[in-house]
Length: 67
Image (cartoon, rainbow, N blue to C red; front, side, top):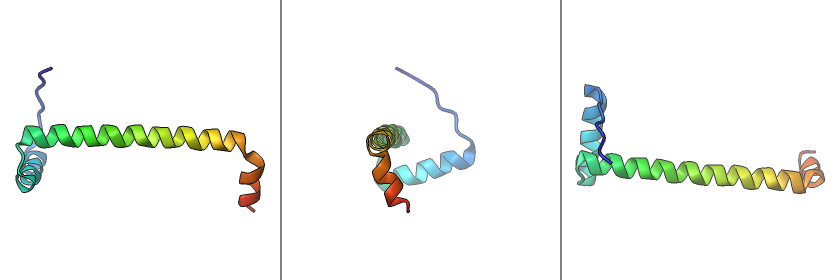
């Protein structure tokens, strides 16, 4: 899917510099950065789900740990 991404001059310069350091095109850098962000968000959500499940399964243990 094609898309146009409009960046202000400051952000464009920052992306260009980071892409240059990584030896990537700006497009490759943005794609990789977005993919990394999405993966971290997925992992964070999974951790929240596991924590909620543990809290529901072990409320007494958590209460004692909080004392």
